[in-house]
Length: 292
Image 1 (cartoon, rainbow, N blue to C red):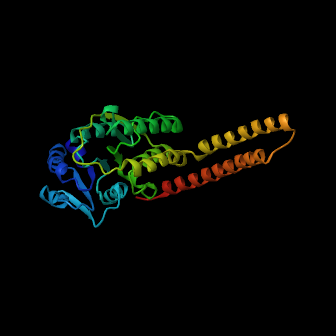
Image 2 (image 1 turned 180 degrees about the horizontal axis):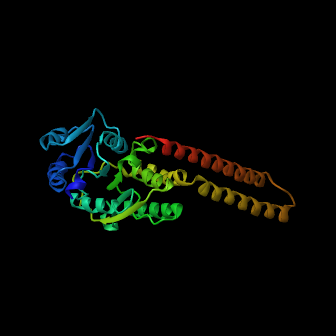
Image 3 (image 1 turned 120 degrees about the vertical axis):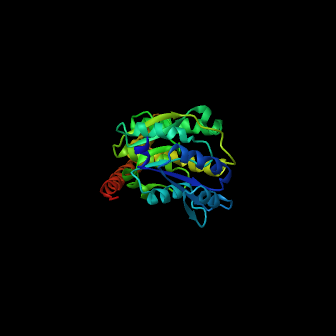
């Protein structure tokens, strides 16, 4: 794998992960001795910067925390090689899996995602949520998505950078980049991995980020095909309107304001979906024209 290592940049977003980085960085350097390793120190208050210096890896030190997605974008901009490897700093992802993911990438794919098993998820609720998102996303793209939110992935740098302006600064960047790749017709593969118990405390707040993850459901539709989502809501309003109209006409012999409101809502939602579809098409056309 020496030749492949020369073309790889490993990007690790880190916030107060000194304990896990102490073990991760030496192991990573042994696994990929010729790879470029970039740790994006996202406003850490611990010894993350010192550990990077000690292990002679490149560190990008943010003066304050900008978010996981922002750290990913900073690392992607700074990377010099043609293949980008993204992995967490908390010790869950094993460096020994990287060569296997890279090997799959070179079989003709544009992105390879490390797919976690249900037992590899942080807890039951996150596993359930991820499974729900995967099923919905699979329905949207008509392709099996095994793990929508995995942060362990290998991508081709040139194609990944086309979508930097679309990526959020928070924890939902994996969802955004996955749907963007499918929308643009790029090839995505999933490779089973086994995740370890994370070191330290998770930075995801169940209540705060739970609301954000609910918005992911709508983002999935908007990123891939807005009309596919809005059309169903439009049809729902229309069918309810028809049913309510028949009920009031048969029982009271009149057309009510509620029926009119439901029909108007159906038309408005349809038009919003139509406009959203056009905006999405223009957005992806702009990313296709973007230069490295």
